[in-house]
Image (cartoon, rainbow over all chains, first blue to last red; front, side, top):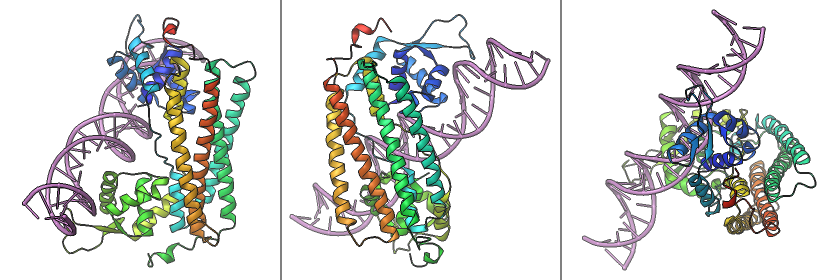
Length: 191
Length: 191
DNA sequence: CAGGCCATGTAACAGGTTACATGATTCT
DNA sequence: AGAATCATGTAACCTGTTACATGGCCTG
């Protein structure tokens, strides 16, 4: 149930149309909650139906015509309620670990290259986030808003740091592994 | 598309029934890919239909009767294919950061308590994983399989460490924040 | 034989992904 | 007029979640 609340937050920061929201979900908001334009339009429709947001008046409302939304008091109340309500952390899920465990059974062929590719991607993200930190959170930017957003960015930086370190370590392990895990074809009969 | 492959891996490690798989997904496998028994039964049906696994012969196949599965060669081939195929990392998604960003707009009331609760949960997980590491990956356990599974566990430990550190840091920030973010009721008109 | 647990399932729904459809505007 | 781009939307599908249903077995 996070998407509607992410949208409410974005609209409180600045009333926007669907496509503008999509762009913001590709940039800053997308760093911690991604969404496609289809999801966003669907959710805008729901939020409007529930009376949480409303479309700003426009001359000719029609398909293909820009439509901006703003948050209504009921929407702000719902966002405050949701933000302060207890929520359990979602269980961890990452395909890479499934693949690693599978590789322990069917062999590591091919996996190593993809780990290297992931390492590059995570290093790139890390550099990108560090650039943003330098640009947007220098000295003097310490209103409550700034500090909360900085906390989020720090989480992103720390997580990308975790991935680069873990992948580097994993690739080192692979170096010293026997050519294959020994669980390839020849094993099929045994299991 | 990870669940079917997690199941194939589990069945290669040891042929099992649906409920036995469910238990293993609550324990070791669940540390990186959780699944409920409904998901597992649904997926077992699909995998059987695709010829990737088959039910072991049993006297009286009937509802309420235990039914064990084993992986067929086609299933092993599919698992090897999937494991070595390139896959992009999934975009990051965490409700906690949505809540933090929302709190920057509607105020931090109530959120702090829930962060404290999360901190306790992550510390507990961390202790649990460290216990497993001590028990299952002591000296002398360094076959290729052991080392790959240890890598996965290290990821779990490092991620829980990240969370405990980040939450501790976030709670410290909260201490020095003004009583509220100043973005409560009184702001509604301005935005 | 009642209650509890083991075991396998069904049904309905929510959220996210992918592919496609349609209208409006701008540029050449 | 045609092409590119902006903008909104529909539809089908897949995965995961929640609630419930059914049958067999064991124990008191």
